[in-house]
Length: 386
Ligand SMILES: *Cc1c(COP(=O)(O)O)cnc(C)c1O
Image (cartoon, rainbow, N blue to C red; front, side, top):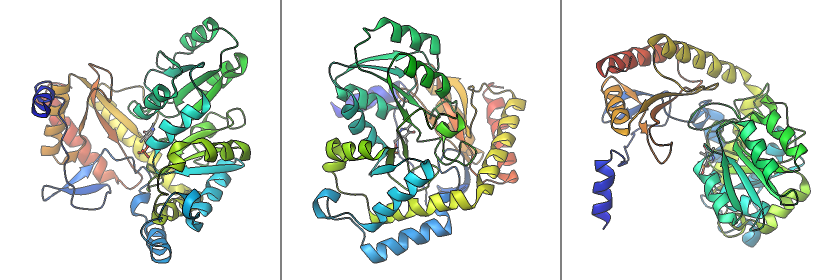
């Protein structure tokens, strides 16, 4: 049965395999004994290997050990977790925050504490899989609106019976398209129709907004959307996730979220690394500037070459290919020319929108980008895509 399933996936060009990189993640990595340019990591600011971040993880491990021992409610809460939550609340401008072992866990356990069977969830069609899973687990009626389509969202809000608890769910910065949710309009509709809003800012945190606080800062809705989640695993270069909001909201989550209660606290190292990453974001704004500078260089190069792109506004720059087999062939050709960016295929993205999702980081230099563009040109020409 397993073999049959795998064969079917393979026939559809949807089979996935792990590839080992024999080096730290960075602008380049070692793959099959070759150094290649990595254009697919979410380590946007290069903080996963920043000396201060790495050192904080090492120091916390020395002081508090490799593992946390149990759930924080069971064996006590370690200082690195508390320091991180204080730092996050300060960074986000909220009263409090609560951290989780992963963004996936946060989403599947927080959403069911916000809404249940009697309620209605309206989610952007391109929401992250963890949000969709959280919505399904809540037991609420689940409807999707067309991607970033506020008329559609309003229609669905108008149509429901007004007394029904309603939660609007969206990514802040969309993970597979690189565009940004219209949070100003969403906040307006939520206020008008008395709905709550849940924003997943996994990708916006650290890179969007004047001071890097994320998509809510970018859209100037921090005071209108009282809580949101984000991850520590992307721009912050560590692992885990957070919810930021009022003291009461955070205490509520601590008492209701099954993925907080029934899982071991993340290692002290990842909490300490994330705290150090927040400090770097505050102290080294030039990293963010470099990221956006690199993003422009790559985006302009891709446009000049004539690739079909999404409406990206961010360092996520997907090349739309269509069929999964074509996307796999393009990824292979890119690797031959020294660029590692795998094909992203259904069910991660909708059918017929398979793509190469390129991401750029602050640590890439002009030469990396120009070499990558040369590889893209060769591969794109050979496959008649440009
Ligand atoms: C990566 C991601 C998650 C999951 O976060 P992890 O910490 O990797 O589990 C959730 N939401 C979005 C939008 C993401 O891109």
